[in-house]
Length: 458
Image (tube, rainbow, N blue to C red; front, side):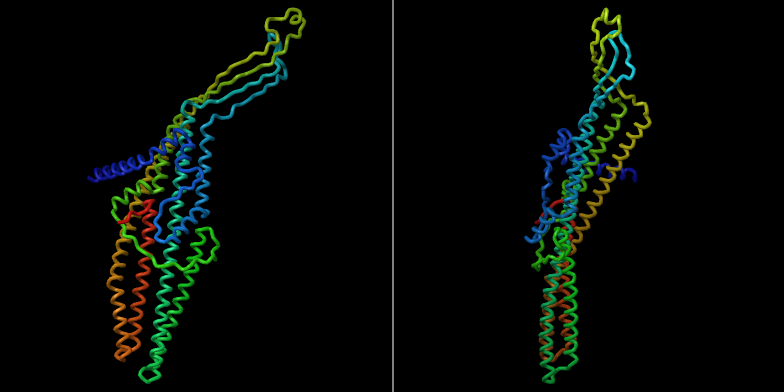
């Protein structure tokens, strides 16, 4: 039973791989048949194709666009892709012809005169189909580099979103904390007035002042975090770290269509890691055929010219032979003899093992994609439930509790500790809600990175 289940799972993986490969077949086939020109036409020789991404804020969209155009990691990946493209014309051409010049130190006397110089022009021709296979291997390598470039783009987009959403949380936390500080200062003034009229204790004033100091310290920590996150945003955009980043507004949450099977399918079609894996599989398959070409010889064709001096001996001058001093042309054909069969077989076996490794690597990346998608979906669903709970229940309850405590404090029914407990509860639920907002959008960025495209919305 276990063997049957394992075989079924392997068959399902192979089916998914075939489906994904069909989505890339037109690009890869045309690239292999036509060469680098086709690949340039598909992906853009200047590598300016921008990936689709979700951005709920216009400023975030600008930051991502800046990073895609300026980030050194992306520019490095683009340069590696362009370098891989230049490999294609190198491998699809014949090797350079060879010119050989021979000068006779002791001339060989022939019937029509002495041989003096020989010039030979030769050209090696690999076995039929070898150059085409080399070109296809190089094209698939370039395709893999292109998808790695797309991977780097996705990584940078995710990093920008992480920094942006965390920065937005810090700005929301600062705004919330400043409101609480103003509220505490109001309570302090009220406590001071009550103490002055003998209705309150000085201990209440001191406790409120200590609470204000705690809130001020929290603001300082938040501002320090903001400096770090702003520097991160600037660094990803290749800007000076100290460049000011304006305060960010409130975050908004999209309603997402989180269907796992649909997201898995989108990942199969768009995840650049998987697309790079497919290109490497295609390359390995052609590398096997290329390694097998080593069993066949390389043919060399040569054209020679010999310089013959006329007969200078008395008999030759007296009765010159026919074609006396005529320079002959020669044609030569040679071939390598692939005797080292064990070496060639080892090369073929190496190519086969590399193909196995690429298949396993693809299966590993697909498993990781599915795990990342599922993990992000669970986090999004959990965070959405928590956000709804806090917005619909916790925050209204905290607001109502604080209002009732304020009224009771003004009527001297409760002390300052009860007032502080109500204020802290309100502050905590508001900060937690703001944190959940940022975490939700960070999880959305991770899901977008996992499937390689924009997550569908309801």
